[in-house]
Amino acid sequence: MNKRGFLGAAALAGAAPVLGQPLASTGKGPALLTVTGAVGRPNRGPFDPALDQLMHKQKISFERAFTFDFTTLTNMPAVHIKPTLEYDGKPHVLRGPLLLDVLAFAGARPADAVKLVLRAVDGYAVTISVDQARRQRFMVATLMDGMAMPLGGLGPLWAMIDADHIPELASKPLAQRFGECPWALYHIEVRA
Image (cartoon, rainbow, N blue to C red; front, side, top):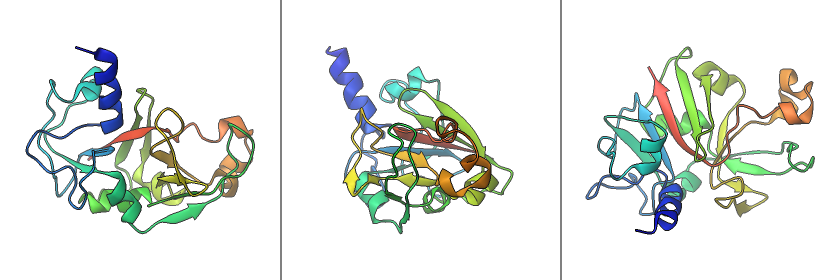
């Protein structure tokens, strides 16, 4: 078995659904984002340790989930922000749906105190509250400067905020503004 090829495919697909189940309610592409926990309208079955290898290695398990492909996410109502990024010190236009709209699409309508775990392909994870997601207008960025973001770069999805316009973050050095914004986002857990 070509493990490198397998792991690359697993990373690209995020969390491939169980065979025979739809990838997303309106899409046909590979699942890039999986929302687990308190989802109200799941479109895939439970975690499968044999097929969900990336999640298995990161010790993620669930009974039901909602998966999104790129087309579904890019067809959702979107916002635009133009934060100065820590990587090059330049402003970039990011586009994508608000994080809470993504959760609502999956049927999750958690209270403000509920915690959300945002997890990247490399295992980096942060926990924020729904209240923080609302106040800071977290988004799931799908495009940067009008282009899709590649896996291996900052994409294909990035949990992002406009830190330049959030006073408690704008006052920090640039390198300290985006610690709660995992790039290569592939999993969100709604902890009810």
